[in-house]
Image (cartoon, rainbow, N blue to C red; front, side, top):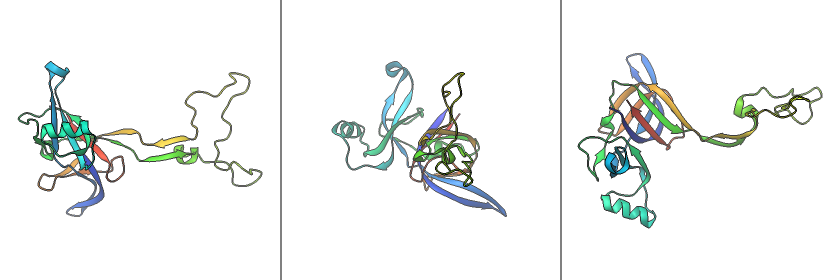
Length: 203
């Protein structure tokens, strides 16, 4: 059965098993509180609408009414996860739904880096730093064709917006599930900045 939960990336550290060092990413998984239950009869699929992320003081009246109806404190994000048996509106889905023996998939937004040139965005080598090159040391160089076809091809690697994309990293190993402290330790790095929202799924 597919399971998923939302958490917040804390940062990276290392854990030791004897002399073996393992780099891990720490994810704080505060219990996701169920705001609404979506059913196959009414919505066409089964899922939970959950409140996740840090608590939020100011929300719109519409959202405030939604949280109040479910008797849930306002949180920064509302997301959907697969339904879990035995949990009703106002209930909580904790980190213990993650199986420590199975691999996980992590979905998150990568760090946004704004408008970047081709050297930073695509690791271009750049132009020579001397010998006649006066202005375009970090430029991409020639980008077009001559008479045929006489245009710049689509998807040409050019300067532009870099980062802030949805990225999925699959088949990561769970090092530890700490239900008491609401922490999840996953081997290796995952996308996004510290404090960013992360979706962890299995199945």
